[in-house]
Length: 162
Length: 371
Image (cartoon, rainbow over all chains, first blue to last red; front, side, top):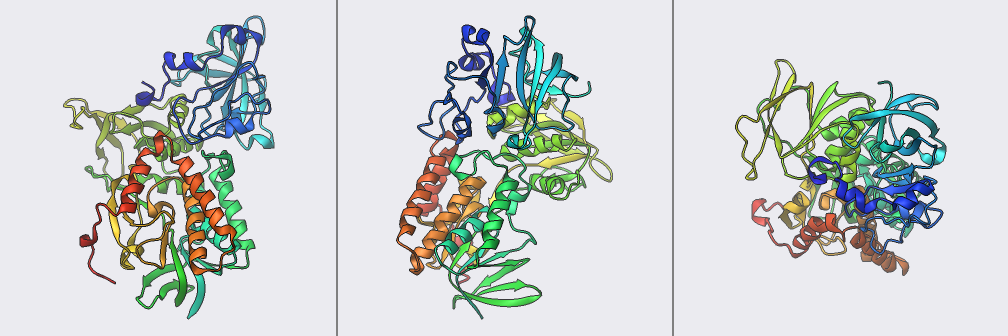
């Protein structure tokens, strides 16, 4: 399916998903990178050594979710924009999704935006909690979206102004 | 007559990296570039590169161009001729170049051809209507000159170029109505595809463009499904309202100069078309000529930069002005190239390179005996 449509299947997503216990603990990165390509910046970007070292540059990333702190530094270092951070501990009702975002205008803290799923369809409204756009991000902003907890695993993009 | 150690034709990633590498080893280099700026395709590649951290991975193409350019201009061993075009190679070893309204004669010891690639065209009715573009042209218009090609675009081809240019069109505020791909599967990296899909752009695999419609310019595109034998499925036609059709249906190496110089060529579809037969050090069958980058076979810029290093070092070693370290450096660059090509996406390249090395499919008979 992924190879026909660009949309990852739930079976593929299950393989990269952290355990339920880990998800409940707090912020953690998920690498939605399902095919071997010659690429390794994620491994080099992580200050906590949470990405397994690449034996072959074509290896798929593997995150040790126990070492991952969910800091999100890897998000803007991934050339494929395939890494997201999710946080189920954000508040009682809402979870957090941190996404890479390279479109203008950038949203601002407090904005309400459309939260889109992997097909680009709106699944709910999201509140922008933070926009990280410092020099180190090199124009790949990281947007923190709070969404209802049951939408955390679906929301992977956003749209301003709808 | 201008004498130099190494003449490099083409100022893209392969040519720039060859120039820097050879000049750092002490060789005198002339770099000629047809355009009025250096950087080749890098100057419009606003996306981050894949590859290894050692070779600019995670850096945007435009930033890599700046880095390479500043190294070239900072090196006294390199003379750059912008808006210079190589016109021909003569048996006495002279290359003629038109530059600054003069016809110049250059006598190099070695020549590295890094002329890049050109876009392939797709035949369909009305493909000559204004509004039908190559993806490279669209990328240049947008990212170099700040001009959008239209308002509603249909992209043809879901290889990396089709996917990346679609994304950049969206970044420029253009509506991409869909990506059509004749193959049953997406050809480019799936992370690129997912990125476009989650922005709402449908990818029509197993589809093709049947025709463009419009009076003065493109007004509609007709697409249809293909069955498993690549035949059009009757009644599957769909009309899409678009003013732009963007073709990203592959590249072919620019080999004219190599052919004219009498280098033995081989037709290798895996590498995009006619390429020079060469050894693992990128030397062709003409002792003076080396190839690097897309003109040696279609790949991406990281591979072109590494090939530039290999060709630059080979030329330096063969001239005999190298330091001892050149052999080691060349082995290291070759190792990095092999690493890059080891995975599943490098399979086609590996097969193609084998053919280009062995000279299988050699198409000597298809060229007149020029040299």
